[in-house]
Length: 449
Image (cartoon, rainbow, N blue to C red; front, side):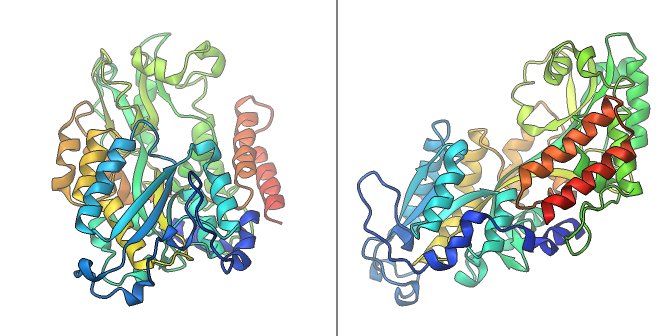
């Protein structure tokens, strides 16, 4: 991946979670027998299985001992459990000696349960992590090197390169891109037509967006050119679009208050009450309502809004978000990972490869509107690309060519709040942008100590 991922790697020493500090001693703890209804033990949750080195040729399933692999997840809740079951059935039919024991927890309690289990030496064989948590778990030693665990099983070529590389930490592939979402630029075709503007495309820059936003805002008192949230996730992305860095190369210092950072923050803040409504001017209405009612020309938001806008009266489409000196797209992703303590690393890796990239997985995700698989095969994605609106769904995958992952530290929520609050003070006119970022950088440096 490009330098933004590399920067996250260099700051890895900052990323250890307190609960994971117990792993080094917990890994050697004996695995208790599972109780009915209780989470499966680490050790593969195995039921009479042997170590993978003793299990013979993978093609000779009949000669292999049965193995159970637990998969702990937070995405396959009631809405998608049947989809996951279909993926598991397909895998088990090809691997009759392997049983997948899928267990789900809601997002609010998932990571508490996961940390507790890993610290207690009874972690799941395989599980899910979002990117922010992936970095911390990889740095702690909790994750399995998938390519080394099953040489030839993991096939990087089936994934979008940027998505695959996002889950490579210190040159080790600790995760596979199970699913992803990106932020794109939505636009209202009617308002563009009324303003006499060409529709956005992948060549657009900040300047193009600003000119269009001003022209659309001029259409009427209750019409606005653009909406882009003023918060941490938009700032780190705008910073990348402007060629800036969030942390120093060694990860020990916040440097987002650089000239590039000030320009990026100003790009966000200066829109308010100019081409973007303030909170007061929105009158309690959400940005989604503004766009759906035809009063917003452009909207920076995620692809999860496609379904919500399906019945919108005005025509609309999407484009890759404009950049300034370069393009950079906000990347949300979940990784499929395995525990470094699993007794069945080869089987765990095989299951994760299937889970993340099989044809059945792609079919189930696309049919069930269950996030997107990060597979590179255009023929598998054809059903998704053929759906409309939006017509330009290709922009979703084009965005993957320049994804930028968020900066991550141990005190992640405090980091996010610090930056967002600084931007809010600038929006309210309490301080100028440079002063707001200077204070935020000092506060973030305090979080790094």
